[in-house]
Image 1 (cartoon, rainbow, N blue to C red):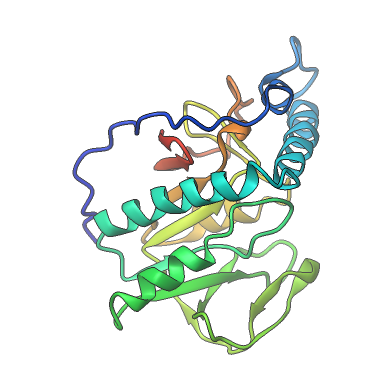
Image 2: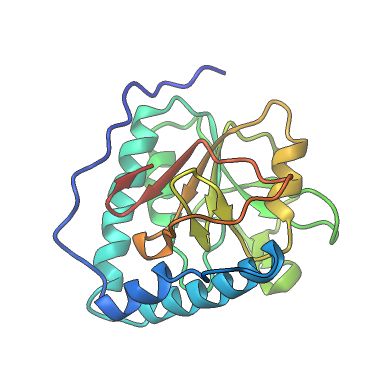
Length: 222
């Protein structure tokens, strides 16, 4: 499928900023990481703590979520996707459900889908979701659609614990998205979703790491 993006300039920086102490935690990287795995684990702990602190900030969190929602809505309007895969929010992640619900309402032919974990070492599958869908608890106590309706996505919104300028993504360490993106044919257009506090100077790169097509934050695109 052809993608309908035209230009991808960086959006103008917004006036809102997360507190400086939160930014500093996210931006610090070890000077000499002993191994990529240990470095990723250290970064993951720091970035998750920073994001959860941001989510608990009653003044900043709603504003930043709204800004990222606007960025996502703009991106969806530019892209001729028929089925968008996304994720159920957890641990302070951006919640895309309201934006996806509005996108679905704009065209009855559109679909959205949530990931389902079938087994520890298997790729994710994506099952149809809509705002009124019945849900049940899946692995790791993450809600999944109750109906067994797998679909193929052509645009995939990927949660990021961290990211860098090369559009490499740091996840939770389970490897689910690495396995999934390696197996999907055709590969969907991949968009990482994160707040700016998740941006680091550079992530350690391993052989299986593949950059995402785009990273979207509350301030713009990378």
